[in-house]
Image 1 (cartoon, rainbow, N blue to C red):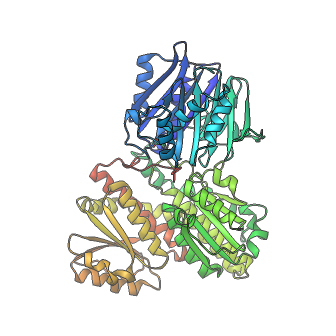
Image 2: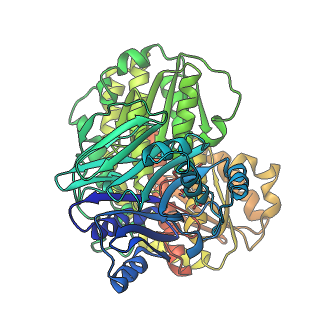
Image 3: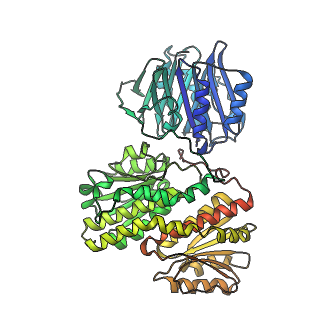
Length: 609
Ligand code: HGA
């Protein structure tokens, strides 16, 4: 989603701003802009579309400067167009903003009453006018900005520049990520470390409610009321390597094929051990998990589906009750809390606004046994949890999540084994064989990827369809959900998933010869039941595409297409069965010619509510 990069330094900061924005491009955005101060005063450039369009404008207008702010926008308020692109200006000041100002309507009314004219439909513009209005009461830029920010409701990260103070930037954070980067030649701020690794690894993470003033030689942080606070400086360990596509056509394809490596990296710490160390999740794992009476998993989108799979494992293997909640629902629901709940938050980026807020909500209810599974080590989520497991999938660029999902599942399986062990439900022999099964996953998954040519063939038949139905049972029902989500996200085909047993309670009415039905059919105890469900589809003329195991007793026949996964994988088969569904969505998208890595309307890390 939106990105912010800001700089005050001895060098020309324009190349730094542009490079920083490029590093954030994969998150998805619709327009880009920057503002800086040069000899002529405040300058602003904005472009709809890619950062390259903004870079072309920069080249044409030859702008340069030592202080500037920049932004990639993913519209929430007002259509994507140049007028709504950030920065927004009021008098001699410019503002960029990530997030949503919830009380923007009331503020807009008030500011209009004061005579301010609005030129955009965004919520952000009120921030610019509000600071300008506060500057009528005090000459101090930082004080005026803080006083304005104190009046904002909602979630935001903000950077402000003022012509009359050409040596300083003001930034603030409340519910959206923002950090400072400290360098020899100046100071920087951004919504993501990746944008600043080009200039520094010395990072100071702001906390919610922090405001900061940056100059070329230093910075100070206060709470919004002006009380000074200290925040620790850390050395970022993230890799600055550009994420290259290599032999692949799209990041999503690359990330699907990276899954065996991503899984071996994630599971590397298991080594050849026959028993699992609870410390994998942090030093206090044992004390926080031992007496937990239930598990509450909170997540959004694909991560939510990983949570749904884990529920089957946690209850069946560890014998612990488990609930899985969509973060945006949980955070506003009046729920019954139990302090002995282990709260597990899942997020690829660790910046998902709803998941972060839901975690805070859980903590406020007195639930302090918190654990996150996340793919970005230095993210807000990782810092907010008592325990953490970092999946080592590597940067995931494609908006449709793939390798983050399978590595989350591997981490959730480890969590299941640890809980089972702490609860006396894992014999040493079972523990050793489960660990062996995990270690074998990368090679099992490599074999599944060999199905790609057959899947490519199937994809031709889906490309002209308007709808698709996905069916699964048990822990493969969430895999059906994930398959439907992948298809929706990147092909724009309407897809729904059902537990196969629900078919005759409604969705069977949709089935006719135009409706492809995709079934996840591993060889488990529900296979016979599923086969009956599939017959019900076939009897109504529905065309079936079945992903079975090598040893499933199923035959292809008229209207039933069958593809066999190379081996049957017990509890872990969900990790394998999702892969052909990812590949199916990818190949259907290729046939339909959609923008695979940046599907319309979507963004990578969902940092707004
Ligand atoms: N609400 C602002 C910023 C949106 C945003 O943060 N997107 O990720 C706007 O619509 O411009």
